[in-house]
Amino acid sequence: MFMGEYHHNIDDKNRLTIPAKLRYELGEKFIITRGLDKCLFIYPQNEWNNIITKYKELPNTKDARNFMRFFLSGATECEFDKQGRINIPLLLAKYAGLEKDCVIIGVNERLEIWSKENWGTFITNNEDSFSDIADNLFSSNLNI
Image 1 (tube, rainbow, N blue to C red):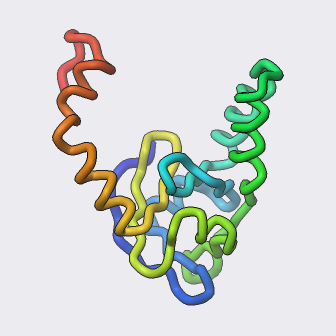
Image 2 (image 1 turned 60 degrees about the horizontal axis):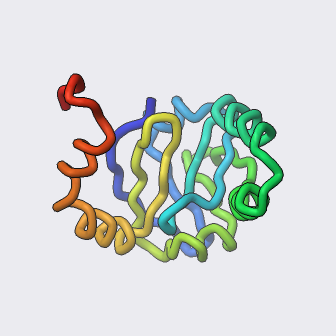
C-alpha cells in the first residue's frame, strides 16, 4: 500500500527522483500514465495488469472508449535509473503541468505525481469538504 506525501524537483530532462521506500514497493518496472485531476498515476506492474483485466470487461460504449483512449494512450512502461529517478515523457509532464516543484503522494495501490501548484489548489479546494466527503463515502461503522 502506498501512502505519504513527498516533495521533489523535476529536472530539465524530466527526471524525477522517487523516494527509496516507494521504489521498493513499485518494483523494477511499472506503468506511468495520465491520471485524473491533472496529475499522473503510477502503477506497479501487477496492479496495472488488474486494471487492464477490468477494462476488458467494460461495455463498448462511447464513454468507455473515450476513457480508455485517454488513459491508455499516455501509458508508458518505466524503470528507475541508477540514481532512483524516472524519466517522465514530455507529453505526460505537460499534461500534469510538471515544471519544477512536484509532489508525489501514495494513494493505496498507486502513486500520483502532482505539480506543487496543482496539489496546493486541490487541497485548498477540498479541505473544507473533507468531512462531508468522508460522511458520504463511509458508513457510520467506520471510524476514521
